[in-house]
Image (cartoon, rainbow, N blue to C red; front, side, top):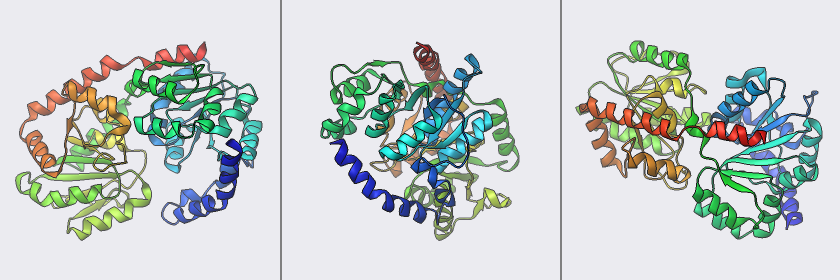
Length: 418
């Protein structure tokens, strides 16, 4: 099965590279460093590294506290971080700088994987969440490199999909030293897609150990007191195609009851910045773009954050947060713990498949609000606007919820050291 998988992957490489080139028209970073995706490097590199893989922004942000603690415990360790997306790459560079080495993860074809492993010679491979790559896993094991999947999660849907290709998945997971899952339900699903010898245990979700730097919060509060003075700021964060349109259409009705309302929109992908700006103008909303340093006055309806790496600072500049990727099916939601950690009320939509346990548990202790439709979105925002005590109660509940669930980073460090 793996031979067929590799053959298909090899045959698709020209089309995958063409897709990168095409995506580069909107986001030029997709065209850069494409050789890394084939395991080709033009410079010498550190070897004998501890290698962490975080596919994109969310996984990278989650693993940073673990990596920093790892480096603190052993400053002599050389760290490599791989990502798949340019946004994830940008986040690694912004947060970790030159303290780690960073490249894109090569495509899962044997020749690229072998070049990658020969170039960096990892001592240990640590994969975040749900990435299962058959060639990568098996070739890593053949070189006797311990491979761990940490903060692992597996939805019911993904579990069913993997069970259909068990002849490909079983050998891949047999090469894994340890799977450390977020929940017992994830552990059960991993056991279903692997053979009985899989080493899997539940260590919790390291995303609960989120830390927000004081200077980030202060920058956000300064932005609120200057650029957003006298405005009630509703941040619509990590949005996907179609989600901004929902809020743009709601805005005129909300504005009648909240005259000082400002929508602070942060699209998930940078290639959509221009598209979102055009949508706002189509809806006849006055727009300011962050990169253009335009004046955000009382006539401004939408402030478009067309930058990367500033989301937490922007959360700190808002009064209420809606976390996107949750309005439509098949998106799965995004991390709602960061705005909760910053201390603002959190709203999300009906579709949080990638964060099901967090969704369920936060709602159970009134640490967030879920909206099923546009009417509920309007009603909830008006209620939060009119009731400052409710906003404070939500943030207090969220703070307690986070504290109650923290500690997974320490468990993970102890397990990795063993």
